[in-house]
Structures are given as structure tokens and as C-alpha cells.
Image 1: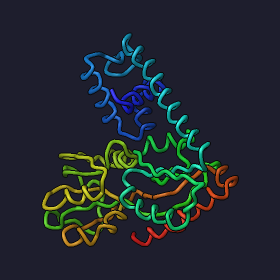
Image 2: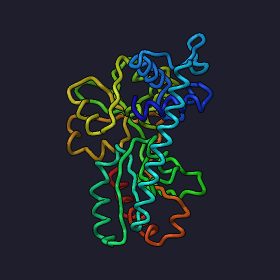
Image 3: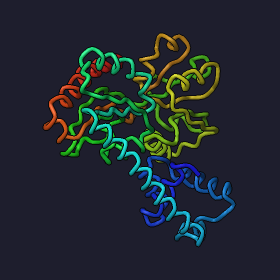
Length: 306
């Protein structure tokens, strides 16, 4: 059992064994979480949970033992990460920049260039790390990461400085030789089609699942990919339709524009890329503030790609 699977079990317990609430907290769909739990139980050949008419009502005897062990392991992992962080902060002025995995290919070179150009200071140690959405937010909230670049999350949190980098919205993308859609479509137009959209470890998947369910869309086949380039590559010469922020299509237009086409939804889901940091760090540390401002100023130019 890996760390993420342990976090699933802990999150279910923390939400009174309500798998729908736990899935929302984990930013995955309820069916995906149910399937993950079933896979864990099958791999271990045990029943972790007690069930009543298919609903989780508590832990089995062995499930309770597994849960307690998982709490200890996750706590130990957090302590280990904090020890490493404290060591780095003691040795130098340490700043960590966390990036959502899907954004890493887009922003890494630019961030690295900014840091090399403006902050070649031997007294500053800067780490650039990538995580899936859930782990990135958790580590930021725990203070293990100082600056994060992710999907819009902290707009209403007064303790967080949050700056928007890119505004976009989800569109349908498809091979123009395989489908003929109007420039504007309804979600139900995707009913009984083969769909591609972000993976189970993303906030985007949860938003799209809810909209498709609300519109009574049933997909013939559905796959999930995290890398936008891989999504668009998969569309070529196939009847799959992708639901993806238009930002990524525009960014990769020169590569795919001749073969692929987009249609807007009549009720589009908005999408934003943000950069965020703890307000106290910004106000109390001039070097930290300068790095945050420089990153924001330069990464804001990504908006022109939309």
C-alpha cells in the first residue's frame, strides 16, 4: 500500500465514512475513490471497511489496525518532511516553490530563468518541486511549501496572497475529420461519445464530472490523462473528444491546430492558473516578497498565450 492509498483511508474515516464527502476532499470522483478502495482490499485480500447495503459504516477489525498504522506512517512522513525543511531553513534562507504537475512543462524553464537572472544570491536556497493537486495544497497548508502555482484555490482566504496568472475556460477539442460540431455546443452533445479529460488526482476532473452528471451525459468510453500534450496527441485520427482548458490548445496550436478543432460550451466551466503564498511570509521577508513579485510579473505574460 502506498502513501496516497493510506491518505484515502484516513480521509474516509475523517469524513465519517461518507465516501462522497471524502472524494470531494480528495478532489476525485466518488466512483474513482470507491474503485481505489476496492482495489486496495483486493490486493491485500482483506475487508478494510464494514458495509451495510453497500455503504461504508466503519472499519473492520483489521481495517482499524491498518488505519492506526496509516496514521502513524503519515505522521512520520510529515515529521520527516518538516525536519528536512527545518534543516534547510537553518542552513540558508530557504524558499520552496511548488508547481502543479500539469503546469511543470509550461512554467519550469521560465521560472528557472527568472531565478537565475534575478536571484543569484548564495544566501538563498530555492527548491522547485512538483506534486498532484491534493498533495500540493496539503503541503502548502502545512508550511512545507512557500509558494505554489496551481489551479485557482485561495481567492477568499485572507491569510493568503493570491495572484491570477491565466484565465481560461474548458472547451471540447476533437479531430476535425472525425467530428462535426458547431462552434458552440451543449454538454449533452457529448452524450455517448468517447471522452478524455484530466486524471483522478486533479481538481479539474471533479468539476467536469459534476457538470457531465448534471447534464445526464453518459460516455461510451472514458480515459484520463494528466499531460495536455498527451491528450491532444491522443485525439489525432481517433473519435475521442477532450475536455480541456482552451489555454492548453492555444499554447500547442502550432503543433495540433491543422488537425484539431475546438467548440465552446454554452455554459463553460472557468479555469484559472494562480500563484499563491502565505501573507505573513510576504510581509515579513523582503527577499521572499521580491521573489514572489518577480515570479508573478513574469509568469503573468502566459496570459497572452490564451
